[in-house]
Image (cartoon, rainbow, N blue to C red; front, side, top):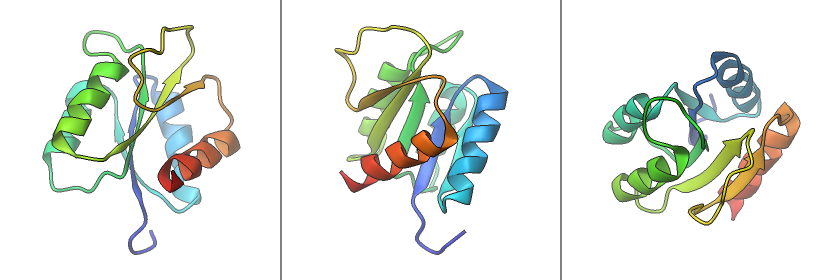
Length: 119
């Protein structure tokens, strides 16, 4: 990975999506920290690993949804940017970042990540 490349914390319970999205982001030059749920995500957020952007599914089984995870991330990492993913129609009033609709192409995801980091 390029020195100083932004780190994306990618949280999604779907292993296939996590893998393909992670590969696309890595090919685009980002460092990816994958997490299958909020527990894994919080471990990354409590570590020394940099996190520039949280990309999180909104609806996840057995635990905290993406909106709550984003609030927790912001408490641990001031100023971390957030993108949400959802295959469902969900109220977005709690969103502190853009909500992207799944399925999403790798190219669109990479472009949205670039925009979020630039904004």
